[in-house]
Amino acid sequence: MKKRHASTEGLGPAIYPGSFDPLTRGHLDVIQRTSRVFPSVIVAVSHNPSKKHAFSVAERLRMVEDAIRLIPNAQADTYSGLLVDYLKAKKARVLIRGLRVVSDMDYEFQLASMNRRLWSAVETVFLMPDERFAYLSSSMVREVARLGAPVADFVTPFVARELARKFRA
Image (cartoon, rainbow, N blue to C red; front, top):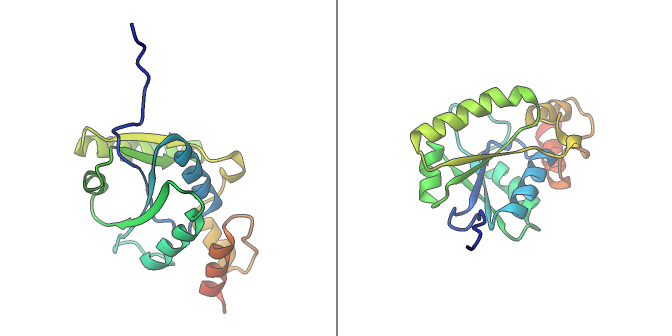
């Protein structure tokens, strides 16, 4: 009897959604990990007019595109509306979510449950970034940059320049 192995074949691209305001090295670590597990990954920058972002959708998309340019099976895109509708449009069933600390789990569990309730075919995969980035959040990086401290350890060089431009006095 032939053994069956789990495969990511037929699942479509893995979708890693987020605001990425801005993209951090923690996000990039999750993207790299995803790219090693799945045939392709789409980093989906959310467009949510009800949220106040430091960077426009176009600026956030450029930051993501720059960061993933050397990951051959990764691409960047934007979406608005229900995430499950975006997954269906992309013929994707796998949703990637990053977990930094235990306190993220409650919120992420709620999101995963709601997405599955909206579309039973969706599978949420949780990935933890490298422990060096477990404390890192976009809001923390924005605040550090706004206060004039160096952010090179937390973001890519392009994102660091964009933060400096944004928060220049």
